[in-house]
Amino acid sequence: MALKALADLGEEPEESDMPPLLEWEAPLWALYQTLKRQWRTGFEGATGLDFNVFLPVIEKRGWDVDLSLELLAVIEGAMLVQNG
Image (tube, rainbow, N blue to C red; front, side, top):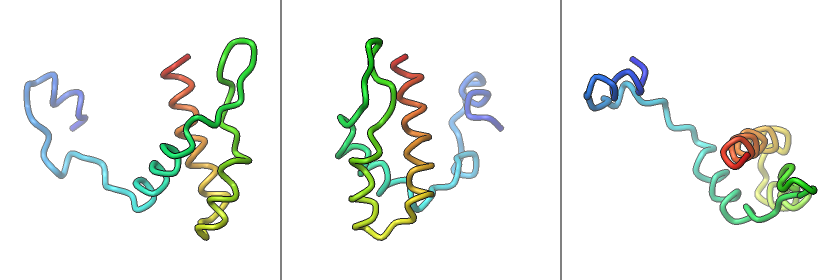
């Protein structure tokens, strides 16, 4: 059952209702938190993350560059929508 539907019914979600934890979540989120001020901006504010700042860290950690950038793009999109 969807988490919102459970909340609307006043029920607490069970562990099986939660999405699985992904092994990339914590390290990637920690990287974003470290470099989260690295945004490119235009006249109307933030336009996207400056991925050039993230690349050396991703490469140094030995992470898959393409996958890491795709996942950072998800965070980037969410932040742009949230602050848009």
